[in-house]
Amino acid sequence: MRWISWHEEHSMRLDSKTNNAHATLAILEHLHDAIFILNETGMIEYANKSASDLLGVPVYEMIGKSFRTYVVFDIRDDWFKETLTGSGMEIEAPLRGREYPVPALISFGAIQALSGETPHILVSARDIAWRKEMERMLNQKQIMALSRSRYKEMGELAVNLVHNLGQPLTSLQLKLDLLNKELNKATPQAEKLRKHVGKMEELLQGVHKTVENARQFAHQSEDDSLKAINVERVIQRAIEQLDYEFTEKNIRLDARLEAGGVHILANPLSVQQVVVTLLRKLIQALQESDSEQRLICIGLTRENNAWVQLAISAPDAAWLDEDDLTLTLDLKLVQLIVETVGGDFRWHSNTRDGIVYRILFPLNSGNEREQLQNLIALMHQS
Image (cartoon, rainbow, N blue to C red; front, side, top):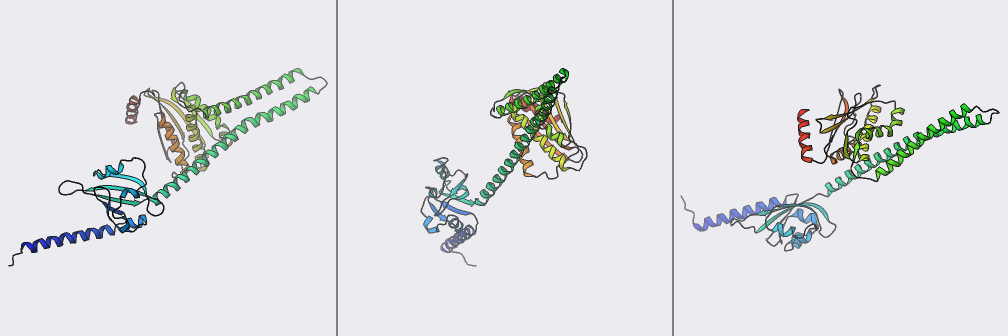
């Protein structure tokens, strides 16, 4: 049995530490993320190959330079000092080397010494340029889909406007011709003249109503303030806006507005936009379905004297593609508008119930705590 001398033991410990250090460096060199080790002043003492590839700068040029010089981040001036204190931080910022900035997700972590001090900071950086590009493409796709949806709505609004004006104007021209024909007779009959004039006045009132509705809509589109609005009246205006489409596509409406006198605090045009959007989605779904029944049900009821529920459904329709981007964006827009006034929006689609939209508007919009309590109670009740 051989006793190990102190010098041999010390040498073995040094060799073990050296082997561990080499193994650690080998692991760091093979990581896909860029790795930097900084001293207490933020100077780079180590950078792996991925860091060199990310910045386009050789490792030997980075050693001894401040890591701050490579980060393009102007939100706070003291953020870098905070990382050097050892507090963990994660930021999303571009890293600039010799060429263009590269979007990166940068994480800072402290390497604690046995004494409890923080002599080194470990920094990892991941190239997220691909993620940024995907986000940009998705955002662009969403904007295009939303833009197409808005243009389509504007076109449908114009069609309704043309229909509501064109039909009375055509009838007016016909009545005017009949009036002239009667006047050109040797002995015009006063009763017939009065009848034609009365019908023309009725048609002119319809044209005037259409123009007033269009003018009111234009004024509302410029006003984003909250007002006490009658929900039933808003629903009726939305139905009138789509009246031509219901007639043209042979869709029957069953509106049961039991809580007709209810008022809520909201923007009138926003709520009308919500109703119009949901009705248009159901019109589209009914057109895509094979069912001969084309019925849309609208219900307005009070819930616990704290909420008013608006239910819009098409029992004989179901979405063929629930992941359609335009559908998703439109429903998210509806949800955003409803939640802005403190409401709740839910929907489901299946073969048994068809498509069902449910909106809860708060009757007491001034007390958020009470709204939340009422909503929780209502959810448990249902």
